[in-house]
Length: 260
Image (tube, rainbow, N blue to C red; front, side, top):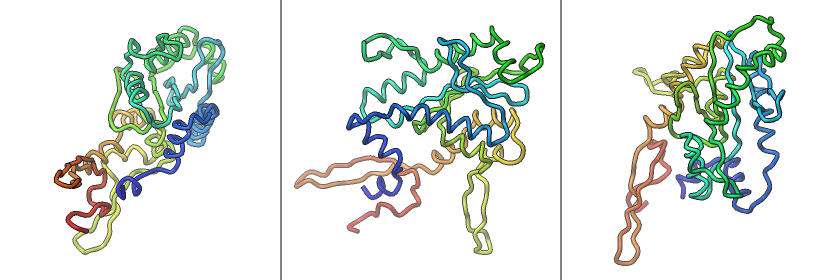
């Protein structure tokens, strides 16, 4: 319990509690969209939601270095039931054959949704040109697809030219706040070092830096580098139960061994 409490997020805990108590969170999706678009624009990058066609609503289209990034924003919180977690995995990997809605009908996976929307607007490029006030003959130098989820991700789920990232990982990039680690140098003084991969969070934002950042997702690499599998032993009368758990910051004294 101490390790769980020390690493818990109040916001995500409340969202999970709302879900378990069936409290409506209908507005969270819209807030996620507004927050993301504002964050991108604050970084000096053009971004607009595109809803010119009712059946092809794109949450956000980003224009960076004459490249288009079609973005699907998913506000689904942290899954609290096995079924929801399973559905989330299916959404991420793009296997729609295993996803049902409340009426037991098949739903499109995230990948299918973003592929369908991007293909439509690439065939109707005039909508993009009008929204971004581009020359009538404009053509994108590159096209990318991005799925941004409020669910914290512990792995890389990219498929082809579609990238998947959580909103927390992207905040570091757009706000230009690289991840750092403080280490003691030879003189016994604390030195601040940028974590490998976060170099993309420095300087001017470019499409190359953005794609490199999405490809590597350095925050995931940093956690995996420090994560450690430990065993927590609990005795019940004559039985000794060994419970494995993963400590993402194994050097932190959150759980103490022995009789402490």
